[in-house]
Length: 213
Length: 213
DNA sequence: CAGCGCCTACCGCTTTCAAGGTAAGCGCTG
DNA sequence: CAGCGCTTACCTTGAAAGCGGTAGGCGCTG
Image (cartoon, rainbow over all chains, first blue to last red; front, side, top):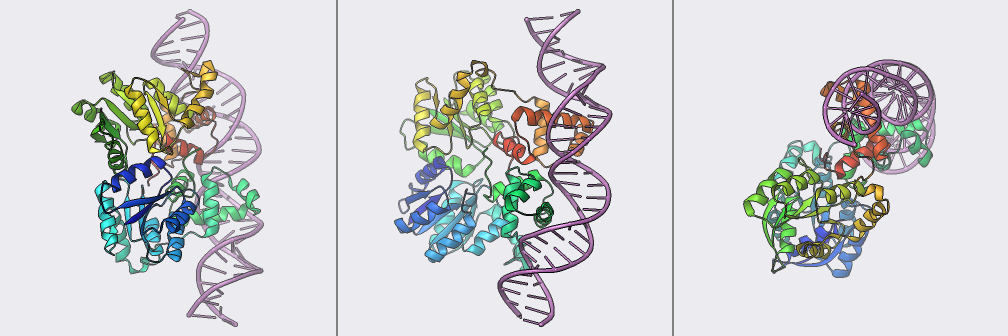
């Protein structure tokens, strides 16, 4: 198995490489700190499998998954994240990821996911599985995990999470303030989040912005 | 060297353990996901060294460092974090940490820090060193890294970052709304942050709150 | 074509926030 | 004791946010 790791923390990539290469049949052949680097690394190294941190700066883990599978449909993709938002997990799975593991799990859990995916199966770590199970009961949510946010709303959410006021966002996007306020309202309603703090955390979880200054 | 690792991501701890144990003279003898577990692990395992993620839930990395050195003054402590806020780095160093490495650095950088600290020296990774250098030029900032936030202000910052309004914070803490507003203003002035989004990110960086829901 | 979702925009209303000043009580310390 | 920092509290003012409804234009799709 030729594996590529994608995460914005180099020390995590190096450590994970050390962990995976204790297995004789796994070889970490590339690393990437964002979606763009990931695309080139996967092609250059002819990788069989990738582990993607969903919350990377720049290109999203979900977007990266879609593009990777367009380039290389047989690529095995494992989502790896500190968080397990139902929406994000379902988006990753719908985009074509074969497994999803949270960073609060043991290292063995990731190895288990790799083994299962290598055999052509799907794997969700326990915490994620219970999250997804609820969605599976509602058939309506399998391919439509609640209200999805539009590209425009994502753009505005990003600017909110960067600390801009509706007024400044309107200036930057050449919109009326009222329009920005409507988007803000729709975002809050769709996500069921009702404070700037909660929106900011959501944006961090989904990689729209970083907690860094 | 008997090392204990403290980080809230188990998979990171396991991976880091794999990385460190490729070195024959290092042994990871314990793990902790928060400050409380860390204190007991260090004593139980008679550790020589710890790597602490500054942004842990519950007990802060800075607070954990202070308490560890009270229990075991010869313990070698290395700060490890995704971020490098000047304030946080200086607090860690003043609390007695011997090194500070950011997670965006290579794994070798952490090994270098461990080697240096083992020899009784101090180590800062390049990014952090340049941050601290500025403070060292201002002699006034060596032991007084700008305006520090009080315990009360930290408490209120935490509640702000959890999405509460000044009104609800006042209710919860049995204060007048006006008082909470003054604290909020003082926090914003001291940190030079002027939006709830920026405050929320700061709270995440310093472990006051988590990006999780 | 008709319907739907999205983006755009405006009106009105209430609450909250941001920033400024002022000041009293309390505890610690030089 | 006097000063200092922290906490508490109130005042004002303008800006921003939060929530409601309404509605036109646009593109896609059944």
